Image (cartoon, rainbow, N blue to C red):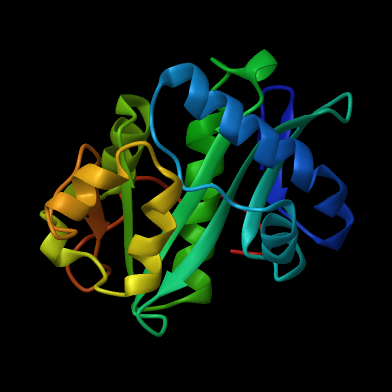
Length: 193
C-alpha cells in the first residue's frame, strides 16, 4: 500500500535489521508520553517479521517509518494488533492509520473468526480503532489468557491492573468481533491480504 511518500507492507525476514530500533522507539515514545507499554525484545519483534505477522512502513528514501505486529491469545480465539509506532520524524502523515488498517486486515486473513482486540491509553489509536470498526468493551470481553495480562507487567500502570483483578485499568479496551462487527474501511489492495 502506498500512502503519500511511504510504502506500507507486510514485514519479512529482510526487515529484522530494524527490530532493535523499533523496540527502542516504542520505549522512548511511551516514556515521552508518560504512558505504559508492554515491552518486547528485538528478537520477539524480529520473530513476528519472520512469521509475516507484522506490518512495516518505509519512506521513499528507505528510512524506517512505522511498525505494528499481531499477537494471538486464547489458542487463536483472540488477536491483538500491538506495538503500533511511527518514527517521530514521520508523524502526522497518516501512517498510523495506514499501518493499523493493514495490520487489521492481515489479522482477519490469518485468523478468520478470531476476535480482534486492543487496549490503549492513546486517543489517536482509539480513534483509528473506532474508524476500523472496533467498539469499546469492558475488560471481561477480552481474552482471559494469563500470558496476555503478564505482558502488561512492564507498564507503569500494572499495579492498578493487578489491584482491579485484570478487570480494569487506565487503558480503554476495544473489540472487533467478525461475527457481529463489519469493517468500516476498505481493504487495501495488497496480495498478502
